[in-house]
Structure formats: C-alpha cells, structure tokens
Length: 417
Image (cartoon, rainbow, N blue to C red; front, side, top):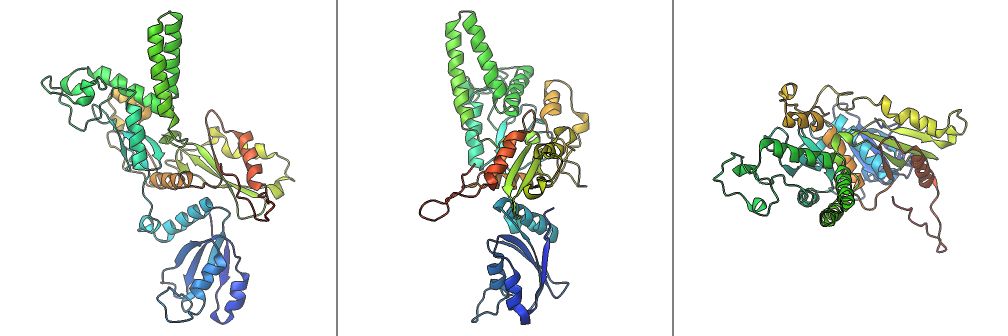
C-alpha cells in the first residue's frame, strides 16, 4: 500500500510556519480532525501547499467554500511523482477510510470487456461491464463499451458464432435471422449445425481471443501456404483475402485488451523521490505492491538493476493474485466443481474465469483509465514468454532523463509512450 508517509500537526496560531513547511508539489493528503469521531478529509492535489491554504486559511469573506481551519488537527500526506501513483494512492486510502461508498466517491465503474458466457449451451460474445467468477471468458479492458462492441462486431465477422439473444430451441421450422441468411452464422436456432460443430466454432473464437488474434492469423497463413504449394491458387487467393480482413480487424485492437487472466504487465512511472522510478506490476489484472528503483542508491549495490528486476518480477515466483491477500472473492459459480465433460466443459476448464479477487474490476478500471488517457504519462510493458528486462531498463533511462529546454527557454513536453 502507498502509505501517507509524511505528517505535520496543525496549529491555527502558527499557520504561517505550517504552510511554509508544506511542499508545493503533487500529493495525496488526509486532514485529520481534532474530534476523533469526525470523518477525515481525503483528497489529491497538484499543489499540496495551495490546497492546504485553501482549506485552512481564514476565509477573507463569508463564503460557502469548505473551510476546516477550526476543526483540523493534523495533515498526513504522500508526495507523488505521477498521476498514476496519485490515483492509486487515493484509491487505496479512500477504500480504507470509506469502505461502503468509495466507488461513488471515486466515480469508479467496472471497465468494458467482451464476455463469452460459457455456461450457456450455445455461447455468444457480447460487451459488458460485469465481471464475475462464473466460468465465463472475459477479454479486455476496452476504453468504452462502444469500443468493445465495435471490435466485437468486426471480430465476429471472421467466424460463424451466433449473435442473437434468443433462447436456442433447435426448431427446424424457425425462420432464422439475417446472419444465417448471409451464411455468417451456423444457425443452431433451426438445427443447421450439430452441437459439436457449434462448440468447435466457439473453441476457434476462444483461441483467437486468448492469443489476441495470433492463432487465427497463423492458421490462415499456414492454410494459404499449403494451398499455394498444392497449386490451388484460387483457394490461396481467397485465404489471402480473409487474412487481410483479419489483419485489418486486429490492427484496430489496442495493446491492453487481452484475456483477463493473462493480463501481466508492469507500469513505469517517475516517483516523488529524486532519481527514482516506481514500477507497478500487474498480475492477472491485479495491481501488486509497487517496486521502487532508487538509482541513486543502486550504484553501490553488488547486484545489477536487471538482477533486481528479475528477482522482483520472476514469473516462476508469481503467486495466485486472485486469492492471496483477501478473504473474499467474487461470487463463484457453485457448479464449477461439477463442470460437464465434452467440448463445452473443456472450454470452461481451459478458458473460464473461476476465481477472482473482489478488487479485480476496480484495478482493471484504474489501469484502463490510465492507459487510455491522453496524454498518457509513463510506459507499460507486457509479459509474453518472459519480462522484457532490457526494454524496461531503457524506459527507466528515458523517464529519468531531464526534459530538453528549447531556445525559447520553456521546457519541452516529455515524449509520450
């Protein structure tokens, strides 16, 4: 937890000295009241001294602006080096002090994701903001529900999975929908396919999403090469056209969305301390404890910075972040221990979300809020086969480098990742 590590008593008769000792820097602060039963005041500020003066100086005239001069006893604060650190620190402390309404205070909404409800006999893919440990497959987060729906529509054009919301009864007399007429759906509604055929199509969708489309394009490339070697140039041309369409769809997918359980990354930010970078590891969508790299002190360490990073981020040492550190989980499906056999049951075993921390939607929301912000401060690196240690070290150098000063004398904006 990002603790409020600085504290100072407030005495109204000596407020000049009090304000003089407060730094004019970004911070998260907590004003504690003289009455122990009174609720504290918790907020973030771009300038701590100015925010304290606004709340604790005598009002110049009758005003409805909040003034805590007569009731405040002390201030506790944490200097922050980035908006991401500030937002995360505020979230942690608001959650600790106001556990029943912190979501409303922070305006925290679950992020938009794509969901395949694998408990349904004939699953479909749709956008939602509800994430539960119900054995379903979740892919995201997206910047908005509209963005999730737009990608889902174009992505499903590559497959023949159903999109309707009706209950499938397999009635041969059912007229079907426009997607079945255009041969874009296997049409289980009027028994145009078997259950095994539909499950196989669902498996292809799951595999494509779980690999962010890599499995789909690799399969198309192999089929195209095989058709070319067999001199079936007509089929090769058709496969090449499908591959181009798939590549165009996947090109519009942001870097962040992926299978929730596979969302392993690290966010790099400048810290409030000098010559310090703070790393925020993300493991299976959960923000772990931050890692501070104090380069002013590391020069005297016997280990290299890369060795320290490997010790902190080694995937083999990763714990189950969905269950560790909390006694509560999202409502898990009671039938998870009795998953049926067959293709549908295998999909739920392999791709379903069966256990998750109650913090998972909240942490995903914080990550998505930062990732899709413009401009975005800091950098992010995703773990694929292993962590990109060298790229992380180069990013630390970029973040610590002073901003260039142009001839006009004004500081240039730092390059955005």
